[in-house]
Image (cartoon, rainbow, N blue to C red; front, side, top):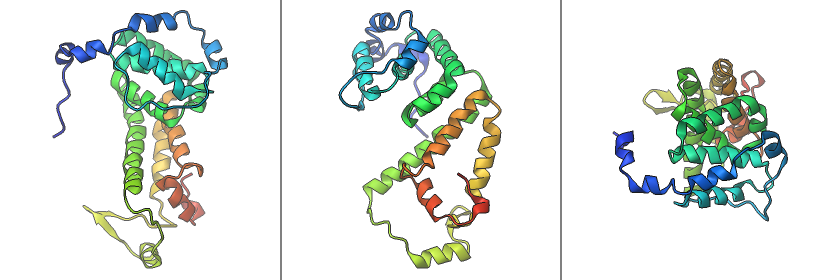
Length: 247
């Protein structure tokens, strides 16, 4: 069993959680009377992009440090991230979630094009945590599971031997007969398998049930782009049967 998540009542007694909300008034002042169109047009200035690793306890400091992730990007991306941070630190959660959802419903296409996968997944997590629509939460959970599975697989690939040469004997075996993996699951039939195509069809179908389901489709398409060296891309390059193409 995983560690039990603390209740809201228990979290209220955590000084560190209160400490992580200090400076909220100054953050609100920064975003007072925002103009969405102006935020879309204005770019975050800076010399280079720097990602945060961990987060400062001071809320204002963390929000300011986040700007470095969005150098050269529309200021709306930083505003979107700031709303997520505020909710994660339990600052006026209900009000900030309404702003967050309204932003997505009005600017979905802009955000899908502008945000990277890190923040698209953060958006999915936020909807799952705060929305009351079970359908939306179920749809977006697909993206979270997909990316977290890839993160584990690609991290293991980084940690372990980088020699990724194909064994032709194994390849022939996979293409000619079933290879068992675990608990009744068999390996992917390299080159011809229809598993991922069928999964894509199901994703396309379920994601049309809600306008924000496009988040999942965007993420799935990105992990199949050649520029991203993922296990999906590597198997895409091995795939030979056009009829079972999933990208």
